[in-house]
Length: 170
Image (cartoon, rainbow, N blue to C red):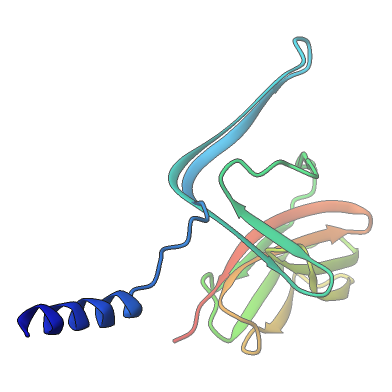
């Protein structure tokens, strides 16, 4: 009788067990890519735990994980401007409202563009500066999700500043 009870209990336990996924995951906290044009040599590396996941919506696919190939390579080169204006972006991290203050701005049109981490345009505002010593723009960040955003500020056609903004909820 004890053998039948033990067998029955083992069968019930076996049916309740679920197998683990064999999918790889790489949660890397560091890594990068090295490419040498002269030797035609490329090396990618990741440091971290193993994991792979793919997320997608109607127009975008985000694949994270172990040694994902680069489809697009962007090189950002900051432009050096000779202007004396100072741009202050505050508060960072932002909860509800992001402010951008232009101190002693050059005359002309400033354009403030905000992108999310996927490169999708969040907002694009322009401000025309005359002879004022200080101008200020405000953005309502309350409807946006927590995460990282990029602010790009352009004067006429030149890039003036790029900043990373962190949105938090309190």
